[in-house]
Length: 397
Length: 128
Image: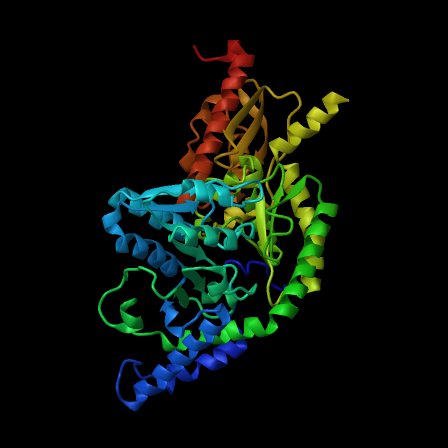
């Protein structure tokens, strides 16, 4: 049975060109970039070349604004705790949203529990969009950080980042955005947009897991989380992960090279997927904004049934998809993102996220559209909610 | 998270899915916030559960435990059926992941609710 992967928002496979670029740095060029000798000079050059490349693709003014981290979660923790610690004498306040990834929400909760930091969680509308006016109204003299994700991982909704960045800039407040689901998918420019801190994660765009970046605009007040060396200009101690840094830069280069073509191709596949599901399966809705949404993400509620049953049935047919975020699949509550969007619990529990990517083909979508209606029908035939619905229709007649 | 082969088998081929039109007891438990709703029907004759059916909205474990509990109660007296614990249901399925143990609890509760409903409909059968 051919396995079909439709969970690219969870992670992606390493691109073969990325792997080729990385391989020499495991065995042939292994020097510590901080060493003075030629072994160190070789890898230092590789790291700095990568930094320069990444700076260019993000639209950073200076390569020194790129700080390498181990993952998106570290970048988010670094941005949030680092800003709070750098402003600790201010009784600081943070503004964020209710639909952030847990690697933003939990550092915020930690800061408010352990350090008394005041955190405002802004609501979203039914599409999952934060209202910039709410951001403006929530600002006080103590606000030191506004952190709003660029696009949501579960539903794909893209936030009005430029407007929010502008508001932050007017008040001289640091603006952070978790851009993990956006980097490598849509072009943007940190400088023009007015972003101070931006998190990205390599494994979301065909670099290996364990590679990340925090973009730190020059002049942004930020304390390090790791101490123990002068690496990354005293911002992140620890020997640079040279092969992964090389891989991340290569992956970003490939993503930008192919972005135009890939984004159109994947959008067409997603449109086919959504149109097919809505036509073939009754009582389904697409969650997220119809247009302001990353082109590869489709979050769909199948009414009267629960998502895990759909995933398990899909898995038996070789398909990989997810409910909500892979990071929270061990919990029982409905997705915090869908709840914040006002999706009722039974519909939130029945949602599945399909996220498409580089290796998704039209054949894959055709096969999914053939199998999925049967899965939904079988699970509905077992559901008491479906039974009640049919009875209420009969009674109405 | 890994399910046992027995859970997968019951999820794929659940026993006793459906409703009993003239059921003697129906148990409804759970809510959509926790993600599971179970409805268990029982048919009782001379104090013996002669038939049991279920409808479940929920994850794979919820469907498998519903299926298993209907299998376990059939042929038992109402008294014996009430002795079936959530652990026994989970064990019969070759175990459940810790995060899914609540599904077996729900199955036990559904069974108790169905028996309560049976006694409500047939108060003369209720043990004094």
